[in-house]
Amino acid sequence: MGEIYVRILVMRYLSLISCYVNATVSPQYSVLLAARDVEIRLYHESSWISAPVMGGTSSFNKSTHDGFHRLYQYIHGANEDDTMLQIAKPILTTITSTPNGLDYLVNMYLPSKPPMPSPQLNLHISNWKSRCIAIRTFPGFAQDDNIYKERSSLSFSLAKGFNGKNISVSEDKSSYSIAQYNSSSHNSGRVNEVWVNVLTCPSVH
Image (cartoon, rainbow, N blue to C red):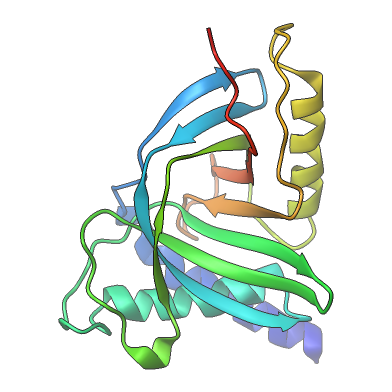
């Protein structure tokens, strides 16, 4: 019964993000380093709205569904101005290990000054300072059974270095994020990314 319930939630989540196909804006960044399967990007200052999903036993799929559902309400008028907002790419789910299990934070980029969300949605607007992020792209659907493997592959790619350059990248091991760029109806050529914060931006000469 539990497995069927989770599948229903996943299908609802996928149907919700079907509107996502028309998203056209994304946070701005510059590529500092690139190898075959990893990039170091410098993301510029930006604003995000986030939906926390706590509980420790929740799954990535269920948490992303729950968080995105609240973000969806926000951009469709559940805010202090009752205004419709443009949806942006990617939907970014941050996963953090805690003593009680895993916490999730579902984030959406805000391209302009946003109205405050309705209090009952439990959403938070934050301003990100510029930061370096290590990125690995992977295809298909991001699911509970493959995201940690992609996280481990990113660490392996960082350890290999960048085309023989003597550059050390120190990654933040406390959390990682999964970025999803496609709607549920997009079955081929899907693009996802695993993100890890870089503790110190590398010097590039």
